[in-house]
Every structure is written in C-alpha cells, then in structure tokens.
Amino acid sequence: MSVNDPRGPSVDSITTAKKGKKKPGVERLAHRACNTKKGAVKPVVPWPDRLFVVDPAPIVGVVEQLERKGGRVAVARCPGRSDAEDAAEWLLDRLSRFAPDLRVTTEIDEVGGGTLLVLKTV
Image (tube, rainbow, N blue to C red; front, side, top):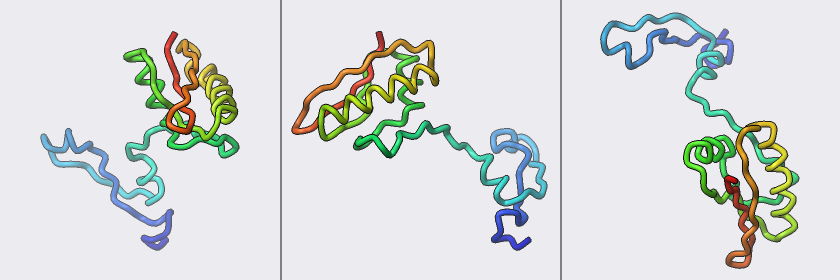
C-alpha cells in the first residue's frame, strides 16, 4: 500500500525511548494506522450531545483526581438549572458504572448568569 494509506508501511520502534538511551533501539515495519493508534492516547468518556453543557471536564481525569484527593471539582457550565440537572443525572448514572466505588454527589451553583455543575466526594 502507499505510505499515505492507513495500511501503508511505517517504522515501529519496539524499544521505548527511555530504554533506547541505554542500547540501540529495535525497529520493525507496521501499518501506519496500527503504529499511530498505539501512542499515549488517554481514554475518554464523552459527554452526550443531547446535554447542553459548556466546557465539560474530562470525566476520566476528574474521577482520577477525586479518587486521589477527594473534595469537589467543577465539571461543566450550563445555561440554566434544568440543563444542569439533566447533566447531573446523566453524570451520576455514568459514574455509577465507570467508577462504582467512588462516592459522589452533585451540586448546582448559580454563578454569573449561568449554572455550574460540581461533583463532590461524600
């Protein structure tokens, strides 16, 4: 295949950069798409399009932070209270399956003409 095709050839380094400093790296051919996918891609839990949220926080990062430190984290801004309530309901349902041991509640704060959705550990 062409080098521009996802199935085209690319050089894959088997030795990590850290280990490569000590000894020469080992390389092999790989599909461009396969080699690109194996990079440091963080997992994402997407917010659904049906929710009206602005600047939604990355859910995986928020869960990691709350598990590590506890406390409270602002997770999204919404234009109105009903939008924030819909987002809070969805978020609690999603977290009950994604991080079942994490005990959290939501708070809705009215701020600056908008609504802030906050996740708080119990």
